[in-house]
Length: 244
Image 1 (cartoon, rainbow, N blue to C red):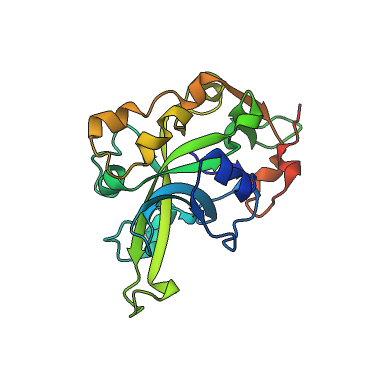
Image 2 (cartoon, one colour; image 1 turned 60 degrees about the horizontal axis):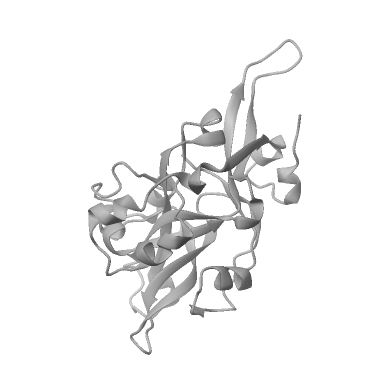
């Protein structure tokens, strides 16, 4: 699974990188070296402009942890941070979103942990690893899905509290350096496939699943980093300090 990742790029840079045509500069998602479930994250998706009716590529904040439209309690989202590539197209919680509501989740890398057994000098602990593209300036675009959940306790549809927008990350078998750390990892979408992945009119399941290929084209690096990341409230560049 992917339970924590890094996303520190400025929204202005994301707008340029992903050719976004609509975003609200007042929408704030702070750079994070420790994005955790239920945090708000930047997403790239294609939606209809309310005023023009045209399909626009948007940069939107979403809460990490997908809440299906039929869910009775939004708390279910904390258990739905990942969707398995092998079954995402058929699971009831994800199949509608996979058909119509796909997104990209920009990231700079992600964390996984390796258990380290106890010794005479030290108790057992989990050693975090930071996994990222070998060329870190490229960043990553996780394959994601998003959903809208309607809060029935709010009467008016246009009330900001009426809707909750959430997302999940699609995962697959780990490859390359990540395979030595953890058996699963997030899927990324190649830049050449952004248009096809984001297009809500593209609904051929076989063609969509064909876009879910090798993460980061297999060019990943993994390095041990500070155990400070084990504490979810800790955040900052120091989390990426390499340790021996």
